[in-house]
Amino acid sequence: MRLVDHASLSIGDLAERTGVTTATLRIWETRYGFPEPLRRNSGHRRYRESDVELVRQVVELRESGLRLDAAIEAVGRRAEDPARSTQRAADPAPATTSPAADAAPFTPSVFATLRQRHPQAVPQRLRKDTLRRLSWAIEDEFCARARPGSVYGFFQQERFYRSAADRWAQIALLSGRAYAFAQFGDALPDAATVGGPHLVDLPTRHVMTREWVLVCDVAATPAALVAWELPGQGAHGDTERRFESIWSVDPVLVRDAARACAAVAASLDAPEAAEAQRRASGPPEAAVDALGVTALFNRVLAYADAPAGMAR
Image 1 (cartoon, one colour):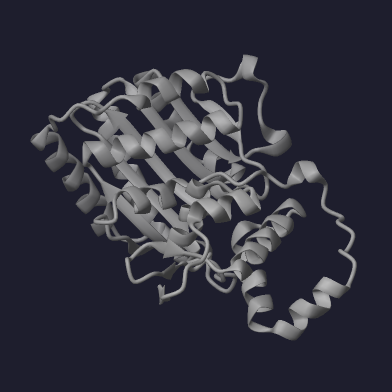
Image 2 (image 1 turned 180 degrees about the vertical axis):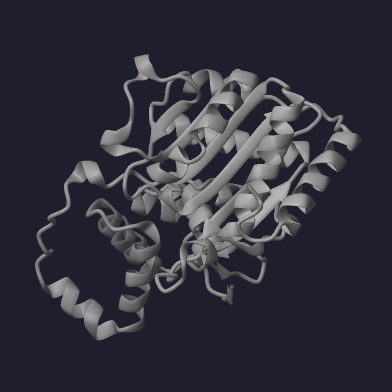
């Protein structure tokens, strides 16, 4: 953070001037380093007048259908090139071709929420294949113990969910409440004919389409695996894609992850989302089954050690 002696805008002032909530501004800073706050000698965050325009530009690009990370990157380039920013101000705004319905409103990501609330949970960079094996281990241990609770899974794309649909039908049966999120689009079945978890369609540009999430919020053996896909990996094969990842059996962290997942469900008008939020609103049970954690760790080792193509 930059150090300053002069007074400038508080985060509340910035929120009021831009229409972006203080909570959202803090999440943007945590995840993207934007807007970059200044520090007064007292240690308080302060922002420049120029930050107001930068945030407004990000909001404008988001409303035109651009992803949040791409919008912030574009505004950052403009800020580095004053001549370009001046030219932009003189030119009329370009016509927008993206339909408004295709641009989802900003929703705080589950990964960013955990990074903000649990800074001690240091993320690790893992390949997608490693995440998949971790997920299998967590799912297997959950099914083996069959404790009721809330289970959430974010699959990014519909085809990724389809490969796990049978397992998630079982997870839904055992948990009593399970949600599977993906870009289902027209492939989303009618709710009356679906057996298994609640299927929730993620809009094309929703922030959660870049995240891998599995949360088992159950008593005694909670577990969460939350990851954010790093950008710019077009040249990598599917299983080699890299994610910044957190996984934990800490009941407080798992409950916070469940609460964030339930909030996403509610923002998308998912079935029974209000009940999911209610269940995640209270404190978790403090006791953890040490033998259950050991069993989960053993499953993780078994999957991690299996040769490629033989883990399943």
